Amino acid sequence: MTETDIKSLPKILYIEDTDDSRLLVRRLLARDYVFLESDNPIDGIELALNTQPDLILLDINMPELSGREVATRLKSSLPNTPMVALTADATSGARERALVAGCVGFMTKPINIDTFRDEIKAYLGGKREYANQAEHHAKAYHQELVQHLEKKVHEMTKMADQNKFLDQQNKHVIADMQRHQRLLKAAATVGHNITSILDLDELLQTTVDIICKEYEFYYAGIFLLDAKKEWAILQAGYEEAGDKMVANNHRLGLDGKSMIGIAIQEQEAQITADVGDIEDHFKNPHLPETRSEMALPLKAKGGTLGALSVQSEKVNAFSTADIDALQSMADQLAIAIRNAHLLKDLEAANQEIVRTKTFEAIATATGEAIHWVGNKAAPIPGSAERVKEDLLNFFAVFKTLLDLPPQERDSHPYAAVANEAFGLLPDLDVDLSQNVDALNKLPADNLPLIVDIESTLEDLGIVKQSAETILNIKEDLIGPGRIAKSEDFDIPLLFSTTIAGMGLPKGVVTSGYTDDIPQVHGDKTQIGRVLINLIKNAWEALGKSEQAKIHVSARLADETGFVRIEVKDNGPGIPPEILEKIWVSFFTTKGDHGGTGLGLSACMEIISQSGGRIWAESEVGEGAAFIILLPIEKK
Image (cartoon, rainbow, N blue to C red):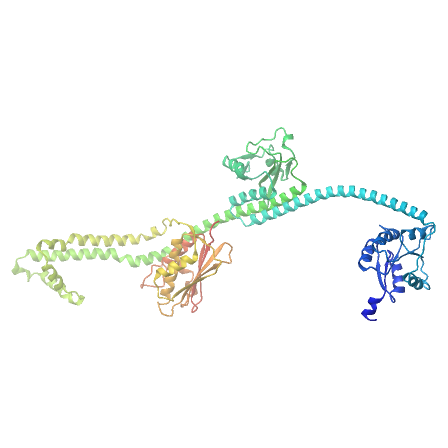
């Protein structure tokens, strides 16, 4: 059968709520007609209006609407479409009520399959049935409609009342759910924010601010126990009231007279629905609008750290959901506080370790330092003293000779000494004739200024004193450190100014950095000196050759909160046995060709003062890289 043939077939719609009945009728009619079906009257009416079938079969007894009511509804919209009641209702008047309702026929169940198709064909062909005593049955049907309508109105009124009640309940439930969702979101916000804050003061203040803003509470404050656990001291409070109380060192005892004290002692949340009902409740002049209050213990491993106070200007402001959400948040806060304490303790311990290790390193390096300084400076005082003695001896010789009569000078033993000394001058590449000529050209009254024994002896004293000062360098090594001038600055700008200022050949030093480089925090001038020192060391290690390549780079470090700077060269590298020694004061691989061995130890001190780290990585033959971690700018 073609699509055209199908479209030309009559359409029959069957509205029936029983599956078996629809299945039987479908089998009987689907071969010869376009068969449509609906299992409920509402959808059946819509389907009839949309498809406009040639015949509609209706079950009478259906939920919501009876078949008769469906017929009445469709008769006005589809006046030319015949509708036939197909029902098991065989009671008296059932046929007539169906006909006055708008049906043109009445068929009973069970269906007679031998005659069913012929009856359908007859109704399609124009067969119509009429009711006896139509007026009487129409009146009865209208009364049925009125009763059904009244019943529906009553049901709808009752349903409307129920819906109104349910709507109110739903509004309460939705409001509670929205509040609970807001509380959970706020708790998540607090948890997210406080876990990333390690500074205790910032952590506490941020927490009370978030609680009041996210939870829309009147006030929040955080109390922590003092060292002796005798008082709960307010460490952070919301807005001006909190600032004033913190400034006044507001504290509460643990004697059970305050909610905070009770919450800490009993390690359980305390709630006051209406503070006006409590006679001895403390009326805080900074918080005059408080009507209800809750105190939550800050519990962490090892005991209770303090308590969180939350206050509202509303009566009965706190629900069970509030307690659960806030206590969960308070538990997270307690962990964060404990971590902040541990970090502070760890930093203090680490500083002590660093201090101890620093002095150990100084003590270790002092042996090498004293050996180096001693070798360089120890001969100087003795040499200066010998020069002084030799000079005075020469003066004694010349004075003696000058005091002798001319005829005795040449034969005096001192004359031989003088002549021998002057005879050595050519071997020492010294030509006194030039000095004699220069002196001869001077006026006689200027000669005492040129030949000044007092000045010469003074210079020798300075040399000796300077050498002795050098020998005391170990005292200077443990003197006070530099005073850092920390600030936020740009790494790219530091790179460009530092490299340009060094005046190295073009192309030797290159630099690069990622686009996401933030500002860093530290002493810009000192860190610039670190870069100069590292680049200079690399340049010297490379022999100042044309093949020398030094690359300075910067990127965000894998370590959170730091920028990584790297100075890398293509030189010979650093042997592993001296890789750690390079940081020791006075250690140098340059021998007598320059360098004091203080540069890298100074670099380490500068970077440490900036809160960063510095280390070296190298393989022999693969060059060396010096890595610096600097903290990102403080917000």
